Image (cartoon, rainbow, N blue to C red; front, side, top):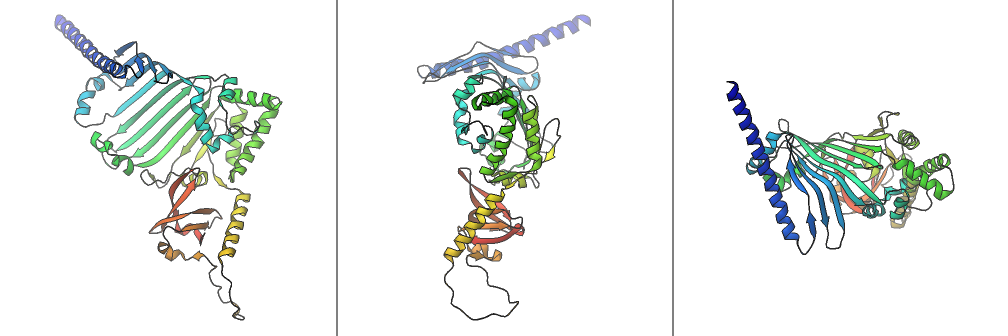
Length: 430
């Protein structure tokens, strides 16, 4: 009996070793084919392919050089399946048009030039919050980052998902660590309309019919905050403590320059984060009702996001608190002036009709539309004033029940957003 058990163990180990060898050889053959296909155009190389008993496929010392000579190097790239059995049956799972319940792609030691992030900074109007008070900068360019010690970044990343097939719930995760700079963790949970399959995901219909139920973003400072404050303090001729106070005041002014007013809780939370290098800033949102991902409702408008997503934010010291962003008083005043001037210019001269009886309702101002007839003014440009005092500008794309679909220009792009008619005070043609 003892010998039989030994034989069985030996056979099992031999079988696993053979299976691992076949998987590694198959991956290596695919990589070698890719190398041959790129020859003459780009260079691709790697050191070794291996599998682990925990179900990982690892490719070490990966190097890629583009035709322009840009080099990318990673210490290791791995596919994490969760178990050896999942790895051994992965090919059959795909052949059966099924989606594995869990997969993660991991990249360790990826060297990246900080210049790759320059364009993102230039295109993002919110980046001026980061540089508020640091001279006239609207973002930190490559030279600034180099002075902070971030000429070349070393990144560790994990991108994965967990599928709960019982209730068709999908959790997407993205963890990015920029060594000595910051760590960013993103987790998004979506409710799927039906059990996913490879064929169903290929057409994109599954994503369009899914709903986002909650999301969490965590930003852990690993040195960036202290370095950026020290850099800007030197640039402005202040000590770090004085510049921090200067930056916090300029940060609030930057919001006002964007026409926005952050809530007191948001101001207090950011102050705590900026005052305590090494802390973690957490942002949570739990939209109610859940967001339909195929309906373009995820507008980048900060005011829209703060009212639609039920956001909370906090640090270790402040705890999680509701936060919001509203139009600044100056933005509301400017909009009021524009609406009044527009209505005055479009209003035709009226002939005198004599006195009217006291208490008689006045006629609707020129250009103001009846809410019941908005569907008769499709594709017209309008200004909408909500009961809260907030003002929206855009084009009427449709009316669906008690919801107006408004096409807005937001931060360089167009987005159709829903506006509940019950929240609308007036709609005026522009």
